[in-house]
Length: 169
Image 1 (cartoon, rainbow, N blue to C red):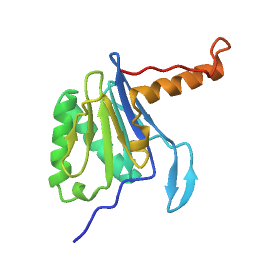
Image 2: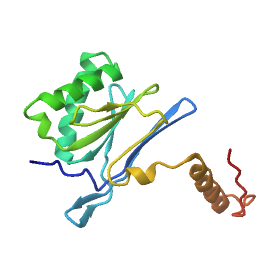
Image 3: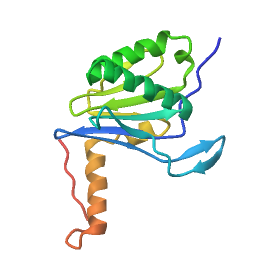
């Protein structure tokens, strides 16, 4: 029995809030246990800069998937949902593609999807999607976002300090 290796060594995070969507990815590239690059670009703009896509996993595999996904976007005139489903179908059934080891997050102004080679096309309920080894750590609760934002404000703004009160319902 063969098992796919765990996609790790990166963090890609999508956050949707107040009609805006952000896709962020770290720049670290590792080879075994060594960090060999700090400034890799794991996020791409596609389809006339209307769609964002980020990857975790093998770089060569991810670029192959970016290329295939971009072709699906062209074929379906920028329809993100349709392109995502069609790529996932191909990824799962095509002899060549099904061996690719990567995960993708794709998003536009209205939708976000997490795509995998197992045929997954997941639209998160929370407006947050994360992949890679850092993914679970990047999904902060509303309280954690507020705490971090206040820490930053306290360090940067002379009218704000680090003595913060937070109430949560």
